[in-house]
Image 1 (cartoon, chains in turn brown, orange):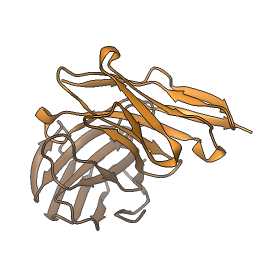
Image 2 (cartoon, rainbow over the protein chains, first blue to last red):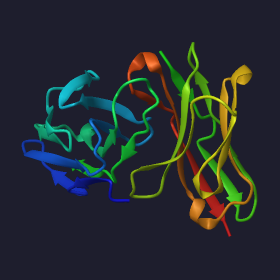
Image 3 (cartoon, rainbow over the protein chains, first blue to last red):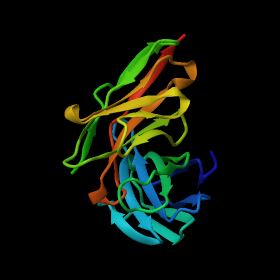
Image 4 (tube, rainbow over the protein chains, first blue to last red):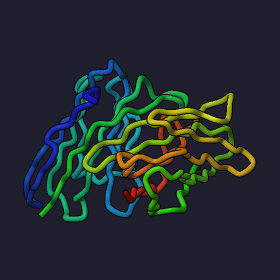
Length: 115
Length: 114
C-alpha cells in the first residue's frame, strides 16, 4: 500500500548527529501520529497531530521534535539521541482524531539505529 | 485507562491448520477494537475492527474475530492458515474518551510450519 510513505526506510546515526524522519500521507486525512516500536515493548504512541495542531505528546524526551507543516506531512527531527532510541518509528494517519473509531493507516516505518 | 493483553507471545501452527489468537482488553465502557498484522519489515495493516452490532466480525485475508463482552475478549481466528500468514499480530483498543488514541497489546508472532 502506498497511502502512507516514510523516508528514509533505514537510518544509522551517531549520538551527536541531527537527522529527520519524514512521513507523507496521500489519503486526505487530517490526523497524523508518530509511534515507536522497540523490541519486546508494545507500540508506544509518541505524538498526535490533528489539523496540523499537536494534540498529544506522550511524555516524549525533547531530543525528539515533531513538525507538522500541513495535514499531509509529518516530520520527526532527531538530535543527540541515545542508543536506547534505536527502534522502528512508525507514522500513521486517520481521517480525524475524534471518537476512537477512526482507523489508523500505517506507513512502513523507519528503522533507526543509534550508535 | 484502557489496556490490552495478548497472552501468547509466539504461536507455531502447521499450514492448513486453524489459528486462534487471544486478546483481552480492559476498558470501562464499550471499546473500539482492532486487529492489525505486521509482516517482517513492514508497517501495520488493518485486518478488521469492531465498533458495535454483530459481535462476529469478518476481515481481510479470511480472518474473523468475535467480541465477547462478558469475557472482555476479542479473539482472532482463521480456519486454515497459509504460509503467508506468518507475521506478528497486534490487538488494539480505542476509546471515545481518549480521542483516537490506540492502546496496543504486545503482539503475537505467528510461525507457520510447512
